[in-house]
Each structure stands twice: as C-alpha cells, then as structure tokens.
Length: 178
Image (cartoon, rainbow, N blue to C red; front, side, top):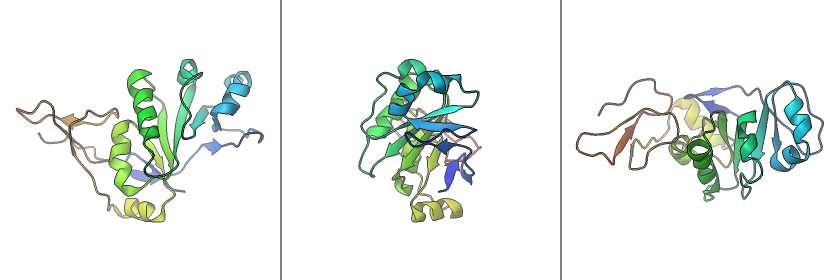
C-alpha cells in the first residue's frame, strides 16, 4: 500500500506485527494488547517501536509510554468513524506526541486535508482511487478553516478575522498568503 508523507508517496520502513507473531529486526509496530503484555521486552529492544490502535481503543494504560513510541498508527474502520481524529488531536494537543502519527485503514481522498490538520504525518492508503489521486496530484484541498490545526502546518490569519485560518496545501513548502 502506498504511504503518503510530506506531500508525496514514499516507502515504509515499519513492519506491522500481528499478535503472537515473532518480532523481526527493524522498526516494528504492535497492537495495544501486545504492547501491554510484552512491554518490558519491547522497551528493551534497540529498534524503534510503534503502537497500533484499533477503532474503539483508547490511550488508557499507555499514556506514560507515549514518548517511547516512534510511531502511533490509528486505524480507520470506515470513513464515517471519527474516533481516530479525536485520538490524534489528544496525542498532539494533550500529550505532546512528537513521533510519526499515521492513519491506516479506510483513508479516502476527501478526508486527507482533515487528517493532516488533526495531526497525522503519514497516511497508509489502501483505496486505489485515493492512491491514484495522490500520485497524479488531483487532491481536493480545503484551505480555509475555523479550527486551529494540531499538525505543524503553516497557517495565516486573515486581517480582521482572528478566528479564521488559511493553511498551506499538503506538501507545500511555500508560506500561505494572508
């Protein structure tokens, strides 16, 4: 599956390991249940570790371990499930998570702007139409917002409208005009 990061499709160094499967060398991401069961072993590894949260799972019991994770992957079960957006905002805004935050599962092109604003750094795209749109640069981007972004995106505030935001398009290195 293509991985979208920093405005382009890139390779993925992470291995997502199922519960009970042996841990390979290199960066691995495991589910919350496995992390809690094998916490000491995983923390002792010399390799980066990541956490996979399925829909409905919370940060309960792992908040103190968040600085240990180089990656947190949040799964979208279906496009109408907004719970991963809330978890992403909590990770960035409340817990100060600075590692990679990845959206996986039902990642669709019309949600990408909002995923990036919620704090996601990378998107694991399984939908063929979305992957094609990203490859060809045909992405619908909403740039005017009322809510501030969690993502480290550049935003401008138009004169006389302190409550509004204008954000840079995904992957843009250029500042947004006011």
